[in-house]
Image (cartoon, rainbow, N blue to C red; front, side, top):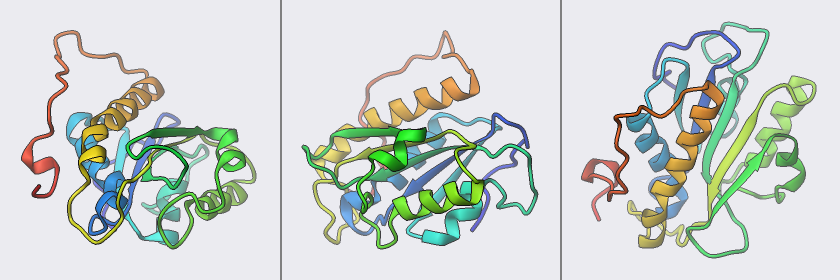
Length: 195
């Protein structure tokens, strides 16, 4: 697994983890959101990780020691993923910190290895809540084999990316550039597979 950029070893580091299988339709929405967010919000203290469906191999990235170095304070963790839940497809769900493990269903993610399992292991290895963890998820419409997102998820994906960017700005104490205009546009062709 490749580290995308050099990371400063300080308490304001953030790991953004995009999960999902891009060959199973909406199941890959976390990876698609990660790619858009990385293009939109480049920051030297943010590490973007395309986690795909790597399961336990993601633990070093979640712990912040994927480079082999150790640190006294683990990074903040922002996870983008498809979430199984009651509700309309395209609905964005947000879970944070202490409520994360307590409020998540046993099988939260649509992956074989439960994200809840990984978070519980991370919590155990940390010896308790030592880091800020946020999960931004979206209810998928279809997880059948397809390299395309469903229309409803594609239309809602930029709202998920907007929320993720807002969380990063809050965590890193970065204000919006005054002269930067944010248009609510349809993503460019490179942001999604062929429609």
